[in-house]
Length: 263
Image (tube, rainbow, N blue to C red; front, side):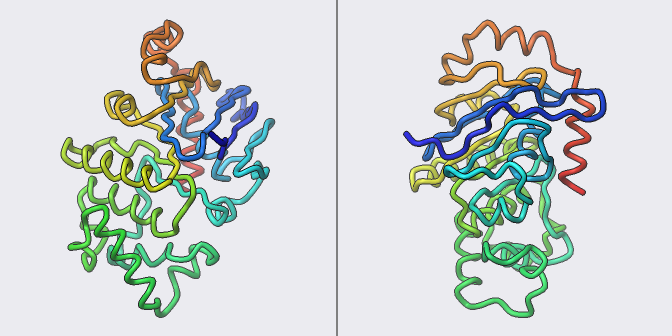
């Protein structure tokens, strides 16, 4: 398989706390890769580095053979990397369909997509197709702020998919979602993967990760501890020690990194 996304020796400190320390990761094209670790291990910080919200102090990020280490978030998005957030980021004061139309074209900035006075018929049709794909087309005219938490997760997934990214980074897609919607999200991910989409997924729900992912990387105290198949990772004593020993040293800085991403 071909490596599509590569993180090479990335480090990032916030003040005196080392949130990422020589962290490396590879995501193969067409794979579903899991990224797990104790709270505060640096997972969201790594997502923020990959997507341009946080600049690394050292190391490199490559996507499809090109360096994107210091690219802006909109540039990363336009190159073909879509991303959801642990806390959903939708526009609550506009409709579900209008949310979708923000992201219909990669070459447009988020603001232009939001403020365009009229979308084309093809864009509306595409947006509705993705809403139907995730199962919430019936809610297209509803104000997005009225959605349940699980429905917001589905909207954010559709919101990313409408831009047709090559690789999709999902941050806690199963977090706070009921079992029915978890199974629905997993089914949609499998379908997209069969159609050629690549995924990197941060998730604390181990059953979700182990049943869905072909490869899993475990982070601990800001570094990539071990990578392998779900079976290899599950039985690795280093992984058991990392979880039993905790990983709270950088939790505050990972929270700060999330704040940067949401700001």
